[in-house]
Length: 221
Image (cartoon, rainbow, N blue to C red):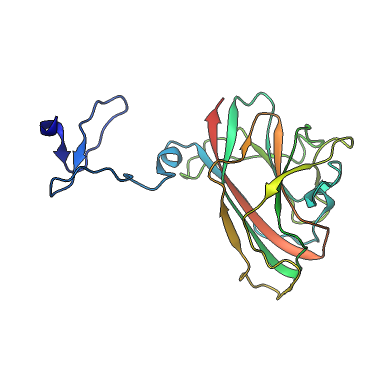
């Protein structure tokens, strides 16, 4: 009923039955009440991982279809039995110096348990609301080309699709410049089920220094 529409913002507890909201001129408010990720972030369900810069060339574990026993510098793992899916939201990658490979960066995955599950795979200890809420995910971050063994030697990393990014492929990147940094809003069209990896992979190994970040939401299965 129109008499149940109220103007102004309210602060409500979970489970409260609230009326529809009107603007100060009586129009029904139908827009988003806050940023699209606010609800999940404020409840501690969104996390990020970042590798600021590599100090070694692109490793074989970050190359399309590279053998999974080789080193990777940046990867996200959802352990088997975690009870949650990892819904990928944003991915950024930037080249720092050297010649970036051709063609572009690709979203890749593996379903094999990582070789170095305890000594190298580290926990995510803080969510994007700044709270010390532990993530179910584990991750590889290694600046050097001699990073972590991604998975068993019998399994190759498979690719899903190309990232919607432009990172200056095939051109010499001036040292310490960030003009080619790009961010892709994945918005959940890639989901890591328990027991799977996500890895950003390049077209070939190259003497290119780079950095990356990934943001995801953890959703109960």
